[in-house]
Image 1 (cartoon, rainbow, N blue to C red):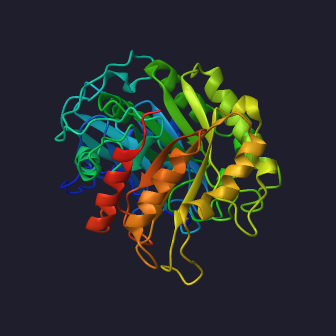
Image 2 (tube, helix red, strand yellow):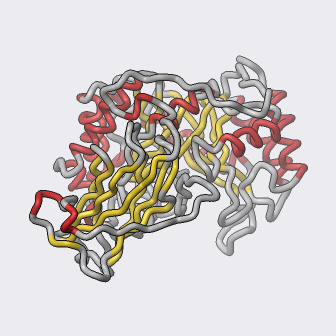
Length: 433
């Protein structure tokens, strides 16, 4: 979604406690990194939680515009510090038999470390890519079933794949559990096996939106240019994901670099130093590295924004049929919530994009990967009803994912009681076939 600062998973109610260790502790990478200066800090939020949870590492006082790494256990993530010497990265706590893990950040010759306390036993034994996947059922508080309809209902919520209360609340709102759960990861995050296990335990499929940038870094991030991806800068990281996905072994959908036909993400052609054709080349490289690592259980989802005046033509962004399993569209009815927007019925919103996808990728299944409507400018309840009816009539559209967030507009299903009731009725009325 345009200008979307995706909300990362966090463990609610935990108090952040920072422990910064001097470089003389022996945690400095390679043994020759300088100790952190007095103004160099590494903070963790939270600094305690279970294996499989997500923590945010934030650094200050590092060399400016410098490549580096953040390490937790055997996981190493590439970082790029900003012009002010800061960085941020999200990490997944790996399975471990110890009660404390060191998190170490190194950029240039400066290193800082902090301690993360593992509070409970790991959710899944498959956090190590070489381990066999173990499904740990997760308790839910709703008995709403998953529909057998050809048109699948999916959702993305702020808390992500482990936010059981959010997912249960959505199921209660529409009397149906989502069969697709979408989450977001940037290139500073490892694959979370706990999240995959949790979604599978709900009877749903994971759709991971994989974003080649550092969250919060803005549009200009040369470290994440498409050429650097293609040239192998992130091959070790891509291989790590591929091996972890292969070890897990169950079907998963991977949506790399979505909305690439816009100009608001640094992986788009024409921004961040990217030339025409660079995105498609990067896609093919990422696909090949992950597949070579054994991840044949991945369904690759190519997902532009709905075309608009001035958007990059889709043909130059498409990596080719051999590299794509499904195509998708992101499209929102902004109504009159923005100065530039008007109310758009579902057909007006999606007709052009669907036609272009069918011409570019004939025979591929189609997913509406992000959608919702504003309340401003019309009846959201009627729009919800029309959306499901419209998509149900498209024989090649196999599902849609509702963006259940309160952001630029109130995109939530329950932005009003009439909105929630209408979507529930529309879902119940769609045919199984």
